[in-house]
Every structure is written in structure tokens, then in C-alpha cells.
Amino acid sequence: MTKLKLALLGCAAILPAGAMADELNLICSADVVICELLVNEFEKSHSEIDVNMVRLSSGEAFAKIRAESRNPQTDLWWGGTGDPHLQAATDGLSAEYKSPMLDQLQDWAQGQAEVSGYHTVGVYSGALGWGYNREILEKKGVSAPQCWADLLDPALKGEIQIADPNSSGTAYTTLATLVQLMGEDEAFDFLKKMHLNVSQYTKSGSAPVKSAARGETGLGIVFQHDAVSQAVAGFPIEVVAPCEGTGYEIGSMSVIDGAQNLDQAKIFYDWVLTAEVQNLMPNAGSYQIPSNASAIAPKEAPDLSTVKLIDYDFAQYGASERRKALLSRWDDEIGSLPLE
Image (cartoon, rainbow, N blue to C red):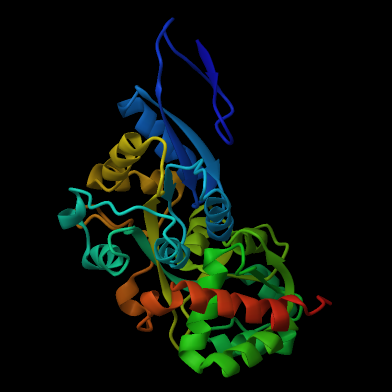
């Protein structure tokens, strides 16, 4: 029997006559290369489970899961920033699950599980910052920005890209970080001024630094590990941790409430939390900090001990009402502004 793979895999899984494969419907909110690596490795070791995977940004994933809440089509959501995962937990869209792997995880990963009532768990971490194309900035005679305040330099007009926080967890983390650093009104004033230098609000959180790597823009505001990926690939990208301080993400994973394939979701959940699997991530150009305490952080990963991290309030900024209010204000005051 031939069964068509869904979404990104686009290939057929051949089963013996009369055999029925177990299924897992997975949303992956990381880079597509990482998503494909996980699916391929899982199916090698769990050949009885057929994974149907779709890649969506964090905001898109949350919207899909919410829209399907009366008839869930997704079993498991892996990756993407923790704030929408926490909102999904608050809104009753995800299910409680205490993995037997919990005691093997870093404190911050266990903390994510605890604050959500065990509706989500940390799978990786990374600090917010940006990557800039040194060749573009040198050619324009622009000093490399080292602080958030530097992003308001008129010399950067048209050279900044950042994602839309409605679709991107990276951009929402940026929004929440600035609010915590500056205060809400001050943060929105900053964003209005920075808007004058923005050429595009992308859908994907990692897209801005990929554009910078291709020479299409001077700078992309992203998680630092996404900028590292482009630098490791040989592009002229320099990675910056803002001098005033910055937020960070706890990439998360959630079992969906009402999952049709709950047992298979739990098998993947436990498997992906192992050190062996997390040690594979650099093979897909992923340089986040792994959540398993025994996993080895990639040597290329930003050293978080050298980054001035804020005390990011995941509980407050992952709460449904707070998140909705900030996104609504962004739509009204920033997203509605014309791009020049």
C-alpha cells in the first residue's frame, strides 16, 4: 500500500500488503531543514509510525491549532518560541503530559513545563539579537550597530528586516523584550522610529537574516543562532547581542488536546528530548542550546554567559490576554504604517 506523505516530505511510504502504519500529525515551527532531519531520524528508528509534517511559523501554528480546536488535526507541535505555546496552554489547546525525560532536562526547560502546568516543555534556548552583512554596511560607511539604540540611525534606512509578530515568535519575543527593557509606551515609540529604517516585515522569524546573507538587506533582527547559521555557511554575517540587554526564547513542544494519535505523539515527545537526538541538531545547521542536560551545546552556539540577558517574564508575556493586547497595539501603531 502506498501512502502519500503530507506537506514538506512529498514522498511515498511503501508498506507491506495489508499493513497499516500508525500516524503522527506534526507541526514543526523551526527551520525546515531541522524539521526534515527530525522526521527522517524518527522514522528510521520508529518505522511503524508514519509522520505527516507541516512547517509553520509559531504564530501560524497557534492560529491553526486554535482554528481546529473542536476537531484537532494536529497531534504534536514541536519548536518555535515558548510564548505561543504558553498561550495554547492557557487557552486549553494543549494537553498535560509529564514525560519520563523531564528529570534529564535543564532547569529552564523544566521550568517551562512547570509554569504551563505541564502542557509544554522546553526543547532548546537561544538569545535574541541580530545579524548584519558587514560588506553592505562597510560599503555604505555605516557603523555596525551594537545596541538597540543604534538601530534608529538614519544611515540604516531601508536596511533592517524583522518579522511580523503576529506570525513570528521571534518578532513577538522582540516586541516583549523591548517592552520589558523600556516600558510599553517607550517600546512602541522606539518601534515607530525604527520603522523608518525597516524595509520589510517578514512572515518567518529567520527570514530577515537570510535576506541579509543574500545581500538583500543590511541587517536582520533574529535569534542569534539563526545569524550564526548563516555565518557558519560562509556568508558575511556578523552576530550581535545588544548592549542594553536582550530577551531569549525557550523553544517549546506541546501535545495537542484531543490529539487523534496521542500514543504516537508521546513516543516522539520522549524521543526528541533525548541527548542523542538533540546532539544531531547541528547537522541541520541548528545552533541553539539543547534542553537535555547531557546534550552537548554546539561549539558555534552563542555563549549565553557573555550575553546580557533580561529576566524575561515568560508567564506574563505568554499569557493569552497580554499577548493579544500587545499584538493588537502593534497592528494599530506599527503594522498599519506604510513602508517607504
